[in-house]
Length: 133
Image (tube, rainbow, N blue to C red; front, side, top):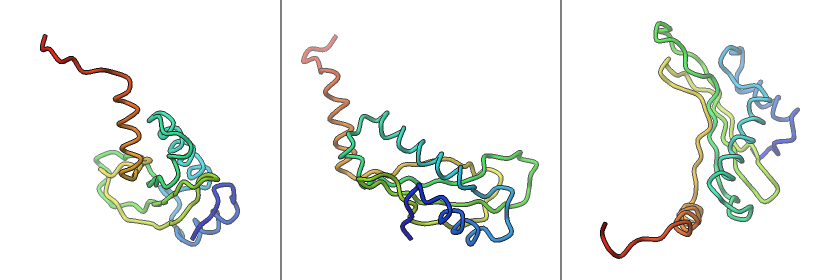
């Protein structure tokens, strides 16, 4: 699957097919668009240039944390987003049964090259003293 983040109808159809009858903790189309926006903001805050953002992967899990007294598993959506030159694409949608301690959110996976670019940018902002204080 490779759906452009702006293909809202196609994403909605894929979500419905994946979620089945579950609705409480599963993702909606707006949640996925927000996850892509959040992932892009994370890449910007890390200082990655637009060309270095290509290939980044964001994993989104719906449903925030619930009270510990909630003792049953719940069905959540897991969505994989990939960054290309033209923006974010949904590459996978599935559901999973998780327990109350599982939190939702957006988690980035970067390539070693992207990591090196971030570290190089950070290191350019300070110097190391050759003498100890």
